[in-house]
Length: 151
Image 1 (cartoon, rainbow, N blue to C red):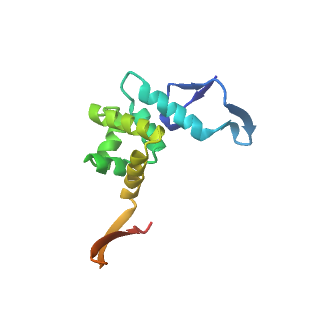
Image 2 (cartoon, helix red, strand yellow):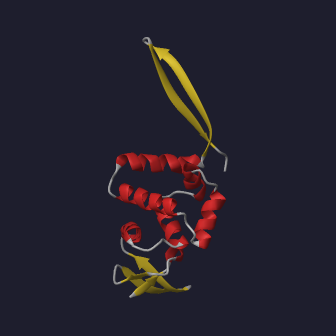
Image 3 (tube, rainbow, N blue to C red):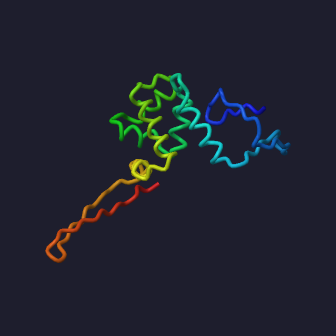
């Protein structure tokens, strides 16, 4: 069995689905269906009966492609607060429940949750939002133009 420690996880072992090989830099590992592996690990983590560790919280957040800033803003916290949770493992119960529920809904194909996650992913990339409203055929129509921050 292979001890999988990606993202700081300590309690995950793989029975199969990987290939170990020698490289010029030492031993290497290749995973079959890495996305499927990540999903299986996250589904196991959200079902585990004990509290999530900081590394487990970070792993699920990262699997959703959410930055610390994006999830913090959505929940009314700073990205520093999220970093502290992940480092200390002291995650508020409501926040942990929210992340587990969010991942579960997304993994089960809830399109509204997936759209919300995409919006959260944009939060830390968008710097300016301009709302343009015009009247057309006696009806007001609005659209949003977004500009990204320079890297």
